[in-house]
Image (cartoon, rainbow, N blue to C red; front, side):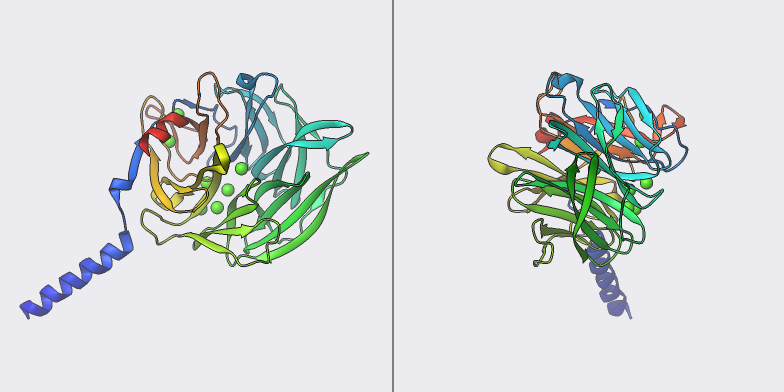
Length: 342
Ligand code: CA
Ligand code: CA
Ligand code: CA
Ligand code: CA
Ligand code: CA
Ligand code: CA
Ligand code: CA
């Protein structure tokens, strides 16, 4: 009887080890140095972000965030709100520069808009205002648009947009005299609910998060090609849902892929070239509160006065101000802190 009990206990331990799979030595804490003005909408509302680099004055760059109940928001690098534009229920947002439009090179911002199941296309101005430059609404064929990211290759600009049923569409944005139109290039099925995505323009890949299953890498130029597994939600230090994905770019096309492992409130880092898992970090309470339940993330390696190695942004599920719970917002992390932890 005693032996059975001991064997049973050992078996239980083995099972629990398997279900946890945590290596605390590979997890380090960092603190945010700034946070954005809370969004106007209550409860789960802030979702994703991207960064516009102001080429004329890099310190006057902008953070663009989504309030998925209302529209797009812009913030300066202090995190102060500059503009709220009620463009619709935009969930994910991304940006690319070098888009040729009406004889000009502009930065184009796209978002997955659940109000009308479209890809919204905006030009962003230095004061944080937006200009809708879509000729007509670019309607997706997906049942419900959800995730989105952008990709540039050989002078062309593309949008990947995903749906809750696990399908991903690839669109090309084409500038015409009277506005931008979209051309559907291909549609694939990833499997199940898919949101977070990021494209690696230089290496020609797109990373797609299948929330309950895995992070995958696809050939961004041919989604039909065999995909590569980057991480499963059951791997060490991972926990579903897999949410936002972003790319920290360093010299010679090296850097890191960063993934919001939402289920254990951490951010997993992978080598950009080999996709090997390196370490994870958490955003803990300091001057500014830490994060939990993060959806969208973004990062830049551009050098700013206050952030010589760039900064990381994370949506925060519970934004506290001391003991007071505020509307959700985005946290800003000096990337030197993350590099130190590696
Ligand atoms: Ca959320
Ligand atoms: Ca989301
Ligand atoms: Ca984004
Ligand atoms: Ca989720
Ligand atoms: Ca999600
Ligand atoms: Ca928080
Ligand atoms: Ca706060």
